[in-house]
Image 1: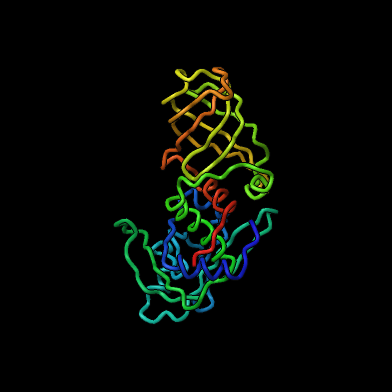
Image 2: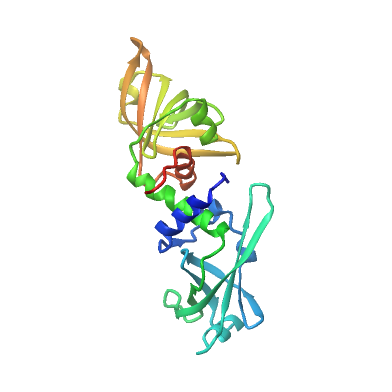
Amino acid sequence: MALVTAQQLQDYYDHYRDSELTFTKEIIGILKVDPRQIYVKCNGNQWPCIVNSTSLMACRIIVGVKGGAYAMLSQKETGPVQVRFCFTDSDGQMISFFVNGRVSEIKPYMNSAELSIITISFTQRPPDDLIERLGSLLDANANAMRRKDERIILNPEVKRKLGLAKEESIVQIQGVPRHCIIRDLSFGGVKIIMVGIQKYVENQQALLQMRFEEPAEVIQVGGVVVASSPVEGRKDILMVSIKFGDKTVPIAYRIRINGSGRKSKG
């Protein structure tokens, strides 16, 4: 994870403290959550639980109504509660910490008679590790809308910030893989150079594959070819513009783009 300054952490907390993230499979993977190591603790006892969602002000956990956690947390006076979060870093090392809170709401989970969702409001600012993880993801999502069409021209410095292994890549047009060179990127699209004929690529479905480093990962983003033009008068070499679909852009890609041009929110 990129180095985040104290000021950036404060910005994340100030701007996104109330923004709630549901722990979907994709979110769990991006945050590198270890679900097996998450617990709720109260009065000297602790029990495994599932985090349904969290913000920087509160989290919602799921527990069985017949278990010890529910029996303790549903009492009128529960006393202080702690939720143990657990993540892994890029080296595979475990990072865990407790966040202090109190029970503020209890209700059935999706009308289930066997599961309950318990809201635990934090009683103090959570650790920086949680602020960094949630904040960087929330910031990327916010900027994906606010700076959707802001182009990032590839150069050595931008490649380093992105962690992009190389400009050369593979794009599938209507399922047929083709070699290409990435020229610029944005949250909402990309421009590439490739061999092809205009009438066979325009308005076609496209899937771009990109290799990144630190950490190493391959990200694929789908979209539609919205424009193309010959390069240097050659009809067989095209500059192709691909517009990404809003629902097909992985969060991992948004975080990469956001990190390449992080701007302070004044």
